[in-house]
Image (cartoon, rainbow, N blue to C red; front, side, top):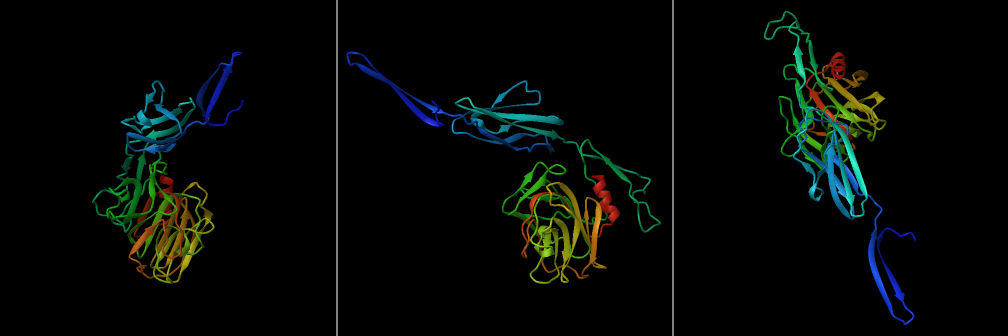
Length: 370
């Protein structure tokens, strides 16, 4: 007999030739479903910048019985009382793996395994003094900076001249409200709306995961010449090819034609940058909406109105727009558009904004340094 999943009972009767009879009943449950188990933090193949004090996982089953875990050499299993999250860990530098198991009262078992890397050592930076001496007068109106860095894992390098970097969101450090900390010298404050969360599978360390309804608001960091660069991993597309209807990375828009700007992904998956009041938008030729990591940049030169876009260190397109200061909105939003645009959805890491126009060589160097 084949029994369906669920609770059952069976009664057996017996009688004899004198008419005496008796019976017995048994109750039992058919359960052929294994527990559902998923490790939420850290993510698989992620890099962790601390010693990993805890592991967060979720498990569900109607008849859940027990949970346990082991890691690396699997020489010891550790039982998790009441299937609680794993705490009290201290893992050494290097590559690790960890498996969590769960079983139910019927003996069905399931597991989830992750692989990750602990990296708590900061990259080393070497400045070549042959470039120029610190505090020494220069006889030229330019400098050549020769700097190198090294790290066991991928690392990200750039130069900040005279505090010209206005915003640097590493996405690794959070404030008490869970918002990314601005690591630039200006320490701008971000305010979050709806559900955006940190993700351990960033391009460098952690990233922020925009779910298509969450965003950040901050004081508008630029108005004249600027450069915006970031790493993104997404399949989102905007509503049109115009700068006010993109899937915005960052924008400071106003209704109708005005002194505003938008930088994000257009309806074809191209990176785009545009400004008002002429409402000129420049769009890349490389599709970045393919769920792969891309380094995207947009620059503006107020003296000429030139707008340029770059993908993975390569110059893509340029076009001239207005030469007015973009001051119609005192605020900017990251991941959301205020003038008919959609939301950004996907991962974003290392968002940088400068108050000058980076050259093609500088953008290429930042990408190739990474």
